[in-house]
Length: 558
Image (cartoon, rainbow, N blue to C red):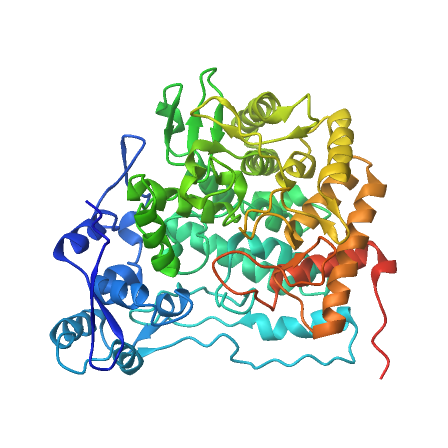
């Protein structure tokens, strides 16, 4: 039964209202925090589930579905971020009483009972006389948010200290974005803000057992690529081990989140984010502890599930896992490489995630050594060694000369390579000869006039051609430089900064992603309009201009 099919009626005001059946509401509840979610034939209960606040879709499920499916707002994230003016229970009851009355207007009801978010509260206007580096330095205060108390019914998770948001529709802190943002904060002399953000993430780990996708209740069921150890390392670039030691409890707890269930897994099975392969290797995958539509992309998820011939819960879980990856979405997650309906994220062992887990294992090892915890140091030395061997065995394609994801259920490579091939260089897993071959492959397959493209496939998804993204440019530059591939690293940085400078000169903006194909067109694809702000672009640009001062440009002459 497709329980998300809803009947519609036209109200007197001309606004479509969506009537959700009792069966739909019951099925929605199956994926709630208070219930259990099934995955890989095992019952999954998120760690510390009792402490998780409910997302908006559970506060008023019938109203939430009506608003999202009725497309009251162009962007589904708007209502997910709205703050109720009364208790959620009271608003849900009021909606139930009023929805069928003559003249009822859904949009008007929402406007009356919710405070809606504003994307650009500061109304920031660029000073076009500034150089790019001056512009970025001046942007940080406008992207910085101060601690705020929890508001009843709000999806925002309060943080104890100041933090930097990406900008645009992204009004909260995001996990993996923040590392690349911090690169710029470091170059702009803001170590206190970096430490505040590191401490904020520590507080999230202490509260929930992991760092969520972002500080929203609807993001709590998933994380993002585990860059926390890299952030901690920025606190003391001269003594990373000392920084790891100070945050060792949080690093170990995050590791436990990603490895939950590993000790009891049988070969060929998976639990949450960990997979046991036939030879005993333990590797990680992206996952989500819920299998219902995402609050922030509710209508898109429901429509895709309706169009697909697969069980709706499978679609929802894989979409959510794709969101955990940060690459939402890309042909690398699609079984046919083209259609989002074939998404199979949870069936894929990603090379980027497992490279970062290797980095986390080494960070914990160094922290344990610093505090003279020899058993811990020995354990994580062995864990890192085992993962390194597994990464080389399952992700390296000797014939092609690059790393690529592994489909663990089908027991074969996905044969869908892209910029994630650079992560083993970024964390030091690759052998020098492998790094040289990766550099050669990148130059032949991914290098474009304005940097490296995410994949070679133009699928219409935003993490595919022709788009390039700031974090992947930095992963490439840093990883290639680590292995002495300096010419390729500089070439990528030069091409990328040329594009960033070009767009800034024309618009006064830095944006979330760029078309790197040589076209003047703005980057597209994905579930929302191109965003400006933009945290990680700012951070990577500052880092590259510091590493390569010749890439800096003077302020435009008036």
